[in-house]
Image (cartoon, rainbow, N blue to C red):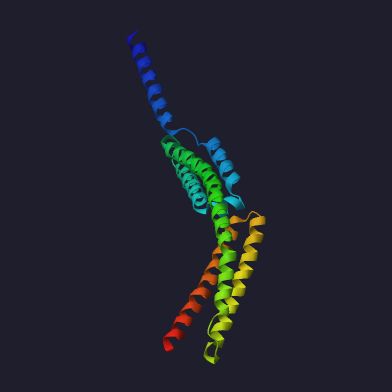
Length: 204
């Protein structure tokens, strides 16, 4: 009976050892990979790319890192594979994809508000630039400067029209960019004319 008992114990020991070894290796997290890719694809839209580019890139980079970890484990001897770290990185990538969507929604609301505020300031600013430009000193030495400022003012008005059009199309980031461009040009005209007028007064 003793030899039989010894063999039984030995067999059980082998089973336990192999069980421990296989529990450490596992199999590739194919379901997690599929779910994470699906979640990321869902947020790889033009809106998210425009409104939360950094958040989206973070999710894409995390997925690439996870896939690289899976590939590294695939290349190992099957008894030594451990996809634990890869699975955690996949979960992180999915969370970042969800964050990118949330960030895009939040940023979109904020950008829309900023664009609306910028557009509200532009008409009186452009009117001020026109009035100020009408008072600018005239002369041979100022002709080129006046033409340049008139050109800038025209560009500001065009940018304002384009910003309003972008708002109607819900392209809030474009609207904000064009509104800021118009504000910059109109403000520059006012500043340049005021400097020219101050310089002219100093000559008297």
